[in-house]
Length: 273
Image 1 (cartoon, rainbow, N blue to C red):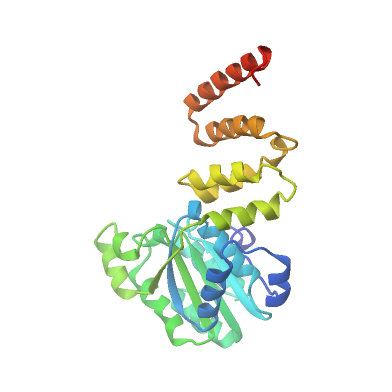
Image 2 (image 1 turned 30 degrees about the vertical axis):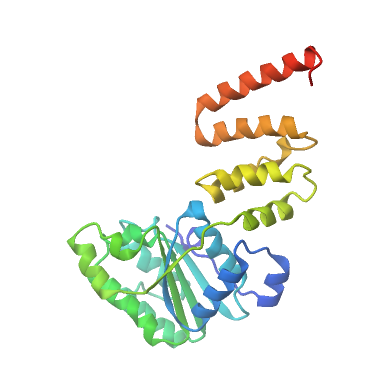
């Protein structure tokens, strides 16, 4: 598989990026970015539905000039360590694929410059990759110009699936940092930015905040913004019920919406609305 579908390179000015892009968690993003620039190795604990992937995108956008940020989705390489090594080798334009991760790090040091490696869905390879890979990851701790963050849904200690993963964890112990919960203010700011002309913002924000999958549902609603144009509070409330049923696949919500719509039309007909 070609590396273009896997790796993302960013050479951006911090100030230009900050002025051009909205960060979903601005304070937390800056704190993590500063630590990565200092060469730290971090285990971010969070799920996509909590905005973990969005954080990685924001970190890319915040990268200072001349800092290379590599982002890999480890779901792609879950069962294919050699393909992962080939993709790494391609990033440095090496004539031959490295034999292991440690060799790539050594080549990276010779290449020079500052680099941050982001490995999303890292928990997918905890029990499938060779033990030496996890030991080699610690080389980042000894290289001040190299920072790394691996993203897992749970703490690595709680995500061990078998004895191989247990020994792998002994070889690699990054500092765990939990993704902060999504607050009401974060959702409101995202809605204000994406839908500045929406009159009934509160209804949409409340609906997203009430869901367990706050970030995923919020992005789903924002992608359906054409269904909110010119909507009154009552019509938007009904539309949100339809969208919730569509997002969750819960048909009972549609039946509830149909009943409320029928009552609304009846009341309008007899002059109660």
